Image (cartoon, rainbow, N blue to C red; front, side):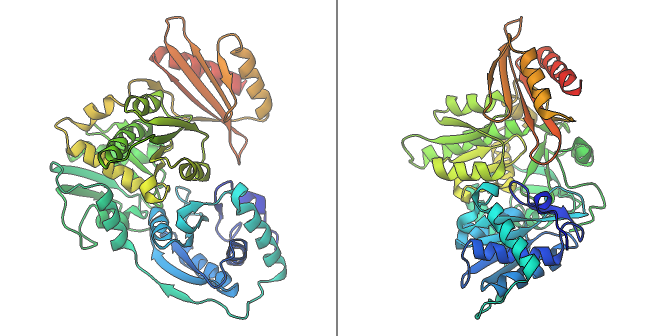
Length: 469
C-alpha cells in the first residue's frame, strides 16, 4: 500500500484521515517502530485512547505491533491525553495516546511519549520511528521469540487524586461553573476531578455540564475551542445560568479555555500569567530558594513576561511547539510553561501539559477572592492582542521579505521563530508582531500586540495587506 508518511507524521505527533492515511496496518507498523526505536522489548508500554470511533481498534492494532516486537502493553482504555501523561510519568513508562485532539471526527492520530511523559518530536525520535515503520509496512512485522502481553489498568482515580493534591479546591468559595466538554474526554475527567465520580469528596463547585456524552462524531460542535464559533454555546450558557465562569475543553481534554461571568473569553495569555504567578508563589512558599524559571512562547502577551519578572522569577522566551517546550521544561527545571494556544506545562506534572490543572488554578484563584473573574482577569489583560490570524500564501519567503522591507526603518527584528518585529508608534506606545510559517501547510500565522488598540489594529491591517498582496 502507498502511504504518504511525510503527511501523517507531523512535527510533534502522527495525524491523518481514518482508513485513508491512517490504517490498522500503518498503526501496527508505527507500534513496531516505536518499540524498536526506544528499545522497549521486554518492557511495559502504556496505551490509551479517546472516544473517537476508530480509537479502540487502532489501539488494538498498536498492541498487536508492540506485542510482536516484545513489548508488554498496559491499556488505560478511554482516557484524556493528560491522563496518559500521568500514567507515563507516575509509572515511568513510555506511552502512546490515540487521539486527533481538536481535529474533526474523520481524523485520528498518535501522541508518543518516552518514559516520564517526555515528548517525542521529529528531531528527537519520531523521524526514526517513521522510517522503521516504513520498513515494517513494506516487509511485515517479524515476531520476536518472546512476544509481549496485554493487561489493563484504570488510573482515573489516581489521576484525579494527584491533581487535587497539586491544587487544593476544598476551601474555595461556592461557585457555579459551566463546562463544555464538546463530547470529548473532558466528559470523563471533569466529573472525576471536580466532581465525585472517582469517589473523591465533593467540592464547593456546582458543575453545569454541556455535551459530556463521549461521542467521537462531535454531534454538537467541533472539539476545538480555539475557534470562536465553538465557544458560542458555552458563552450563552454561562450568562443564562448566571454562572461564575465557564470552561471549554478540546477533544482529548489537554487544553482548556476560560469564559468569564459575562460570557467573554479570558485570553490564554491571561491564564498563563495568572498560573505563573500562582506557581511562583507556591514553590516559594514550599521553601524553594534560588532561581525559579518560567517559560512562555514568543506569541504570548507581553504581560506574561512582566508578571514573571515582577514576581522575582526568570522568564525564558521559547519558540512555539509542544515537544520543544516539554524538552525545555526538563532542561531548565522550569516550574511552569505557557503557550498562547492554551497549552500549559507543569514541572510537577513531569513537564507535560495539562488543561485540567490550569483550569483548577483558575478556579482556585477565583475561589480565593471576592472579585468576579472578569475583574481578576482584567489585570492580566492590559494590552491589545489581534489573536492568531492565518493566511494562505503561495510564496512564504517572498511574503516574509516584503514584510521586513516594509518595516525596515521602524522596527527591530529577530528571527528566533519566524519574524518578530518590535517598534514604537508615533504616540510613544510600543507594538510587536510575529509572522511564522506553518510546519505543514502553506500558511503564514500573524500575531500582533500593542499598548494602544488603534496601533494594534493599524499594524495588523498593514501586515495583513502585505501578506495578502
